[in-house]
Length: 296
Image (cartoon, rainbow, N blue to C red; front, side, top):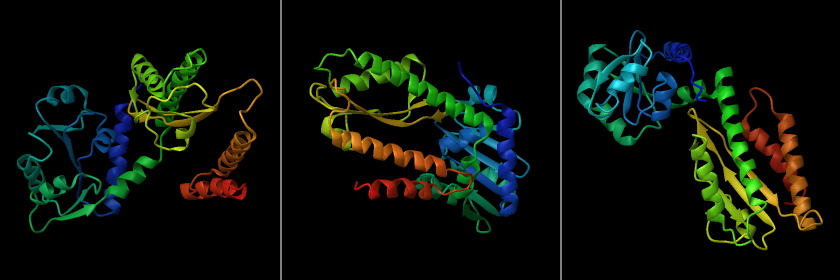
């Protein structure tokens, strides 16, 4: 079942942005990246440009999306048809007609967009990078967003569980690519997208964080690594799981058993340290120090 955030949520996001615009003395913000455009408008397409001032908010897109945008966008948005995000005519007209001085843009937007945006300004207008401002707004998740993330992760875990059940009876000549394909098919069947290229690695290649699934067979491998995630309702999940093949007497070898418990203890220590406001690097340091002290 598809879950969507309400238009009220999207409206509140624009209001928060405007409050930050006021504190940063910005007259407008121009949004060109797909994820930020969706975050603020709740409409997703491959060609859009948002211009948000303190009084108005414009959504620019081309003929392919204009009808769907008109049906889906909250009423507060003023829809404008344009050839592309690089079309200067409409953008320049809006930026000039509102007599804007300080205009925010995303530093992570393509450089070619930045160059086109400069051409839309007059000598009295100034561009300000607001990439970190937008990131900070998106970093704090609402209850609705947390629920969507949890649903994405639950779907991810169920797909993996079903795959493991199938893997338990898989023939020894099963190769990595076959498991990768099964996971991708399961995602399609559940109506979700692959968040990133799924990784399946047997044996020695499981030590590679970004291993590429190939033709290595399952037979004789003591370790299976699966790194996968799904994108559901625009929210991604991501998990990496390492499995040790049971040879009938528990762990395949003492070294793997030792490594498993070291990583588990490091993870539990990191989780205990989590609290609002703590830097991610501090959590990372706690886990890494425990692993280093154990000799790894």
